[in-house]
Length: 347
Image (cartoon, rainbow, N blue to C red; front, side):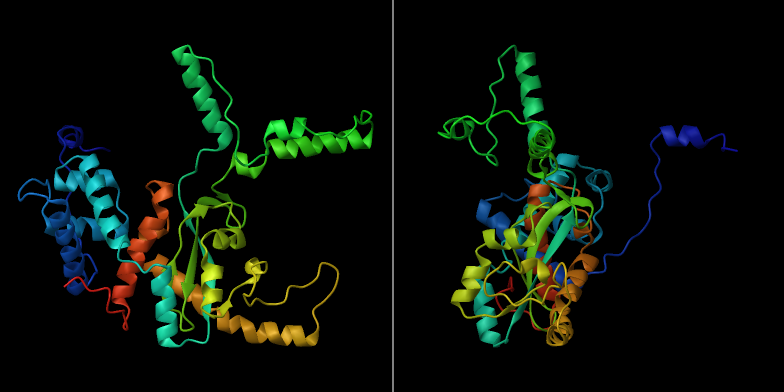
């Protein structure tokens, strides 16, 4: 039975408050505080013109990355608008992401430490679904219809131009019949519903929508670098080739260990893959047994990052900002590491 006065107090807006503790060291808090204070000086913010002080903004950003609370809940607690909370969080995340090591810093640290190899792997951060090409074109056609305009078809950059297909000089072929006709129709249907057009963010391996990030870890499981984000459907080998990482590491003479997904990356060491119709030799099995523990620390590095900074378990913001959020978490992760680089100092 509901208390008679429940609806009265609920409609009046009385909510239950409680205390919470942010399990982050004070040294890290003041480090982020110094970064945000320096950013306000750089953009020329006048004193007293912001809705939140640097202290409250620092606490807001760290809560967002550590516990991933909702923007609406944060705005309700602070008594400000949701857009202001979102803008403050974005500013803090960008300031932290700017401190993350880039590709040159990665190579310099590997050479300075003298590690015999580094480990590469992929990380898919769950996000909201990205609109597909078909959905975007449908929205554009609907908007043009509402405005009374004629919708012009926009070519898909993933497919060859129609003019090139029509310009073929091959002689006309006889019409298809029987099994060949069914095969051609199935091929056309598969191309029409290709994943590049339907679900760009869906990862079939993980069975979720997300963004693909490439990471590099040391032989001891310390996370060193995070790449730009690709769609979740992008294969790991394709995603890492677009970052320019293999070429840069090869020029520096750095050995990279990776799993079977990176078998097409030239120069990277992977395990032997069992043939479709066959078995591995005894020597290949022995090599895989020796290789697996060497590559395992990267899994612990990814688990440590995503386990401590819960926003990487599901990024509720813009999927295209996933790399910025991950690099901000990497900056905090490197600061908490026992042997953090000296460049991550805000004082």
